[in-house]
Image 1 (cartoon, helix red, strand yellow):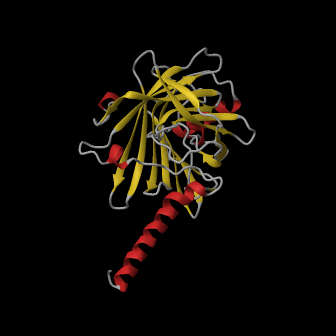
Image 2 (image 1 turned 90 degrees about the vertical axis):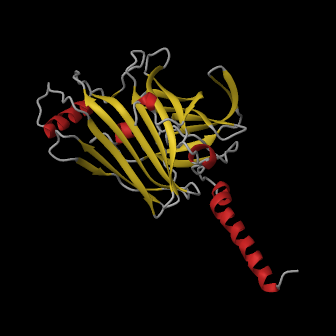
Image 3 (image 1 turned 60 degrees about the vertical axis):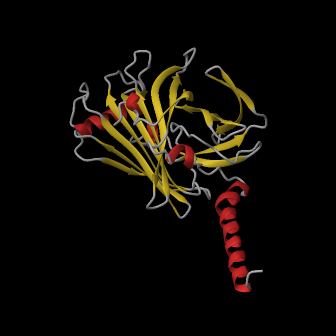
Length: 333
């Protein structure tokens, strides 16, 4: 039998390990009303000798009156590991395709989206530290009908020193970023262009967040969600970069109510049927805002849907297409 002092070290180490596991892995799942933490599969997504593994998605949008959704973006997600801080960046890139079958995407009827990128920065237990979403847009000439849209166009043209019929050829960068501090999420909006006299910047009011600091970016495909169970429910803030980064359009960070439906559903994806747990999102008026399908026997997210400004967005995982290449198909280095 080892000496008493060594037994004390062994028991202390064991208790410390159990305590760490409870605090970082089990407690967030047991707390009532807690959203699931971010989950990173180190072996599959990060620790590959040829670089992070890319997951590809097809993004579709269905406008009011359209019989079926149409493809609008090609997307990819991947994870970068930061050894110096033991943190991860969950990246997503949505690029407009030159394929004519892909439908152009506009915001507020006057801005065409070229590209949308977003990142979640999380620590090892899966708690959110910060996020950022960038949208590259171009002006399009159109007849304004809505007062808010007319005001937005007038505001931008004044800042750009352009006339009503001018449309600057170079893109405008819209960015919304934020960080979690003291269980609150602080968001900041910024619009920038070489035509602007100075960047347009707006601070949004801070909002409280959960133990995991979870904030939802509706157009950021998530690879994995762990710890789901039937009947689970929570609330989390929503950040919509297509509206919140526009001056005069954001009413601040909104809230969603999420629940896991009581019965799993079968999802047909590329001819393959999979049983999934379904997360349903509603706003405070109990209006549907989106759904997420997660494998019941695994943790992979297979499909996400979001209802934004009257449009239905669908992000479908391409099950047969994964790559270590640096997104050559999407034009990245």
